[in-house]
Structure formats: C-alpha cells, structure tokens
Image (cartoon, rainbow over all chains, first blue to last red; front, side, top):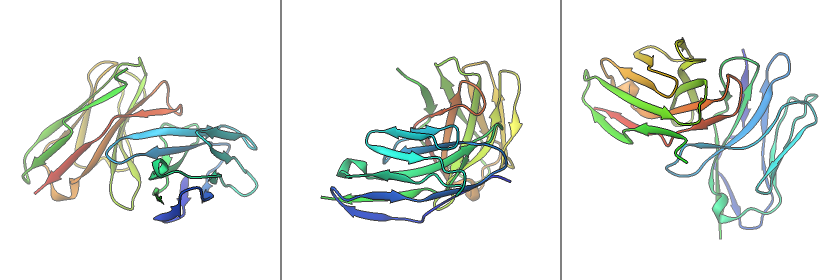
Length: 111
Length: 112
C-alpha cells in the first residue's frame, strides 16, 4: 500500500537557519503530495501542495518540489523564524478516499 | 469563518463508558473524516464518509462507530471506551475525496 516516510525529529535550529525536512513516499500511479503544519494545541493546516511531477508548491517562504524520479517531496525554507516552530506532516493522496500521513517532524526554532 | 468545529475539546472517560464526539463543517464539503493522532504514529484514519449517506472503515475502525447525520455533521461514537483509545481525535472535511482536507482543532480524550 501507499506510505510516507519523514525524517524523525525533533529538528532544532537557530533563527534564520536553513531548513530541510525530508519526505519520501511509496505509491503506485501519480499521487498528489501535501505538507501540513500543526501549531501547538491546534489542528492541521495545509501548508502547500503539488499535484504532478516537477510541480513546486510554495507558501509562507516554504517550498517543496514533487520529484517523481526520487519519490520525494522535501520541505525547505531559507530562513526560519521562531514562529515556524511546529510539527510538519508530509502526506499523499493517490486518487483514493484518504490521505496517507507520515509520522510528523517536530521543528524547534531557537532565538 | 468557523470551518470545522469539534466538541468537546477535552474529555476524560472511565473504562467502559461511552461517548460521542461531534463534528460539523460549514464549507458545504461532501467528504468528512475522523483521524486519531498518537505520539510517533502520525495520523491514522478511523472512518470516513465520502458523501452524505455513506460511511466506510479506515485503517483503525475497531471500537468505533460513526454516523453521517447530514451533509454538515459527522459523529464518532465510542461504545465502550478502553485505555488504548486515549488519543487526540481530529475531524476533517474536503470538497471531495482526495482534495485538500480542512481539520478541526481536535478532541483530547483520556480513558482511565
């Protein structure tokens, strides 16, 4: 079946550092890929998405490129802020009825 | 701009008690979902409703039942709570299955 693997956290960075959170997936066909963010005490919010190979999703300074050749959708940000501290989830949907989530990666940004 | 509303936000149950988690969305979405979130395990789908009048099992349905009351509302029932059901429960909705999902703020349930 479909699966999503994320790097384990927590990831601890200083403010203004470069962020990469790795995400790889296993799926047949051509899934849509998503990054969701969960701030403390809240539900998940969609951060960005890509629906086909080589698409780049971007939002709030975050970017991720759909790489079918490496089955990856790594999340990047050039300069993180304390307010980016949250848990980040990679997810896919393969034309089915449900999103398949990775285990989540906690990001902690220190001033 | 309510989006997806879940009640209650917190609940403590004794083993064997029953309860219903309520969820309502005001976005006229067709599909609704119930997930549970456990440490280190991401989110796992319990049940979903692709459209009004239909429900289907997800990855971890045992011990739960659901009702799609109407297009807006999708409830999750625990008939006899067990400590293994201690978790954070999220309701979500989407315009159609496979589209972007919108989540509620979650219900933190503890079963003692």
